[in-house]
Length: 180
Image (cartoon, rainbow, N blue to C red; front, side, top):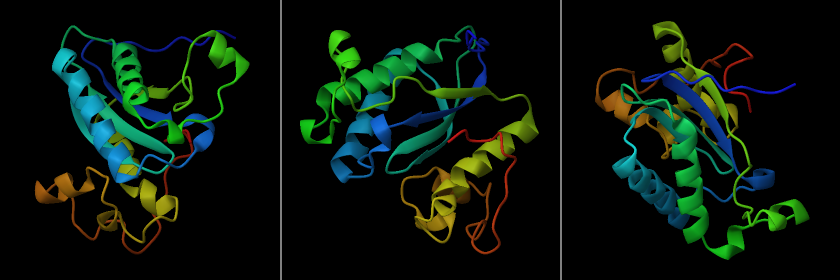
């Protein structure tokens, strides 16, 4: 079966990007900063709106809205991953397979990423909540407010979300959200 990505100009997308073999190195301060630089570097050349974001030790989730007339999120991911891989300390790189060696690929990231076209406001809200609750889901913190690497704090500051959201009863999501 051949997989075809949905590409809508100006679309809003949910993404999951994971480290190679799910190695948990993303949240070290130097890698957090390097990933931020990779995003900024890419966004200078290929703008996008980052609507929501969470960084976990071995993966990240984000929602982007692309500019009108632009659908090329694959280029953005290629540039982000490439920038990070070129500048990241070698100690975080995984074992490079023969296949990766033959393609001159590094072993920081999984080759692919997962994307989902956001269909409507409810779908957007569901995915943003999924992103913000993800550190709790993975047992890293008791509440979204306790996870540093998340757009949750921006949502609270803007009055879009209560600081205590997700701190108590478990928040459940449809099984197709997230694709971890």
